[in-house]
Image 1 (cartoon, rainbow, N blue to C red):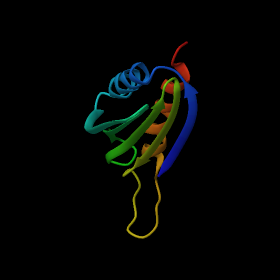
Image 2 (spheres, one colour):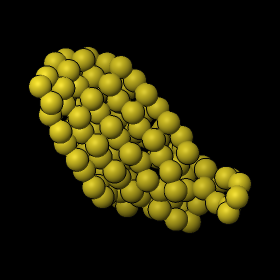
Image 3 (cartoon, rainbow, N blue to C red):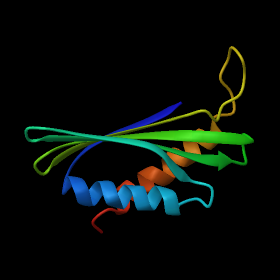
Length: 112
């Protein structure tokens, strides 16, 4: 399992749409599996679950993206799972880390 968190400024809807496109277009096997949205007063929350096939681990890996927005203040959490092997110990998490690295690169390109 790998995790990334970041605070940033920007438009909630623009950033969310951008990340959905970047993650899906970042891999031929990536797809959006599930999503949820909630708005409470001035706070928006979006949860997205993506999956893609990892050649390194030979299975599908997941990436959970949670975005919280209050006006122009955004907080992003991305967590990957599912690409490691082993029944009791986790090993070979390269596929998870690769999925997260590509998503982080998209975050860093946003607005540039």
